[in-house]
Length: 285
Image (cartoon, rainbow, N blue to C red; front, side, top):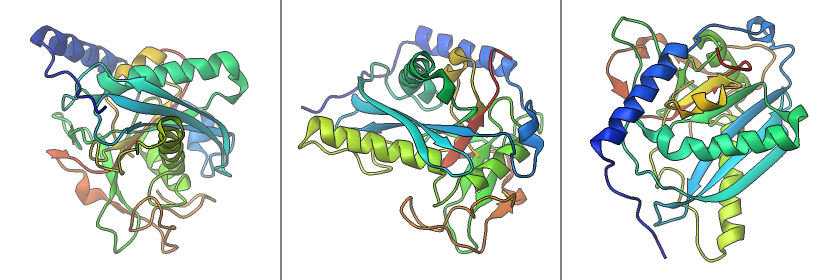
């Protein structure tokens, strides 16, 4: 039976979430911290991770959290785990991480315990429908639009993430795209939906974009685990990497004409598009 998530949390909870966001924001490191990040071909990078949460169709509580690790630059899956979860926190715009990220943290911790040699050096996350600024109040650029094809109408929005620069995040996103959606997130999404089909049989996963609009992608280099409770945000250039992201959805092959960055999209205001988020580096910053 379909379930509905709880309503709006009390003001005390929202205030607590906001304080936690402010605390983690103060710990953010928006520069490259590893030698491979500055290498044009990312020499030294061997494992990239991706996470995703997929929902059961018509059910805003039952979901599947998935973690995958891919080899780099081959982009072959070397580890995967998917688990059914029950979401207890409601969806509140701007606070998506507090609803979904605890389950993703659990998956990362399980990987660390079971196969520490497969821990990804950097992880890719996709924010689902959260509204986020492309430029901070001080004029700091928080993200960049990546138009993968001259005819594409759906750019990706890339954020700096944690322990990686925006420039490196954009280049790495390009390198991780066989299709429009970066491969780590795409594989996590495929596996989470398949897990729902296997586990629940007649029930179907939501179609992409139904449970929540696709949002920003961001890079994070081996978050401090508690740092995964931060907002998930967004995320080209060549460097011996596959060409990126085609004009269509996750199933369309990459167009070989290459991507286009759009500096004009470094604007104030907010975006609610497909956005990718990276993070890298071990330990608390």
